[in-house]
Length: 122
Image (tube, rainbow, N blue to C red; front, side, top):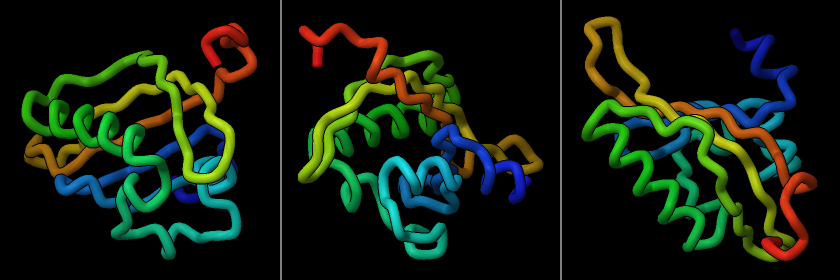
């Protein structure tokens, strides 16, 4: 699994129930935190990486998933950053469960679709 996530271009993350990063893939780091390592990002939240607007929207999705266990599938999201142009992704987010089926966090995968979005929306 580590090898797959280290090589994947997709932006994959795993978070605990407080929405702190447990692990992020190489593709996630390349897109959002170049030059950092998964160890650097462990314990951080979206508020440490993205704009407040983006981080708050992600937190709301995660709270909903943790509360209900319902996945968010194929959500088109505008990603807003601190100090760089915005982008668009298609995301799927799900509950991360332990062996007993208890929700212990969330995980998700996003694919950059910025080039597919009309310039009027950007």
